[in-house]
Length: 320
Image 1 (cartoon, rainbow, N blue to C red):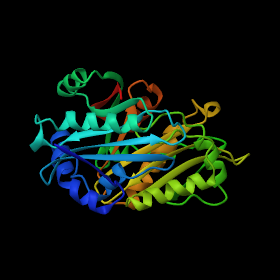
Image 2 (image 1 turned 90 degrees about the horizontal axis):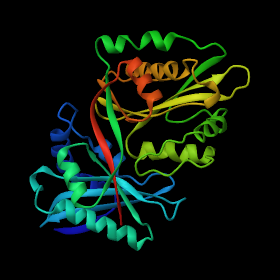
Image 3 (image 1 turned 60 degrees about the horizontal axis):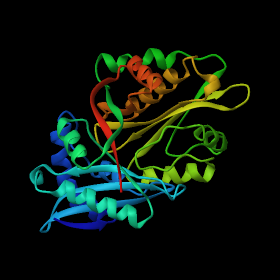
């Protein structure tokens, strides 16, 4: 296998890898819509505050698989965290091993001593990780909410259940100027690590704008709903959702400030967000959300809204 480094922000890279990703995900997640150009662009793009490595294994001139890693620029000694895929037609031919070895070498050259990779939680993945000396670091559930039928109707009640002392503010793509600093401050309270993305560190309005532009470049429309304190104007919580040229949207962050929890804000915010996006995008059929199995609060919130877990993916960690 020949390993090459490609630019994840180059449309030519997306076009090259899209057929293999479509074949792979139709096997791993057969109930999902086909992987779209926008989804793959979002997956491979360089994120705000992070560098990106995209390594592709070639069998002749055909891509056999790839790994993408995000490097937090604010943590020069931190891990490279991402995902690895071997396309079905090329499995059991050494592509996965070659990609892991290349990723470890790339990280060592950059002074980073740990590789973290997400993969479907299957016996095959566990066996591969064991052979490579990797340890299980954590597991995420993939939850889905179908937006047609009873589940869609079930959003209206929570969306209409006002939490006293707060109002909901909705926007798409660009946060209102009068709210952007307060929104950035709330975002700074987020402490959940995300695959391949930079840790949140005292974000500013400029960081908010950079993240908005990032989603737009990948062909995604970002929907946001925030709960605002009617007395102080403080953003008490928010949730994000990313819509693209697909029947499936991605849930992003859901955050309620620590001193505002247990009032129903999270359920109200997220129900209102998804209900609005469903009305404005008739092509949407489902929303997917990834949640750490240890995050009991968010898992319970999603169950209240009708999300159902259908698969799990695990993170494996190995020294580079």
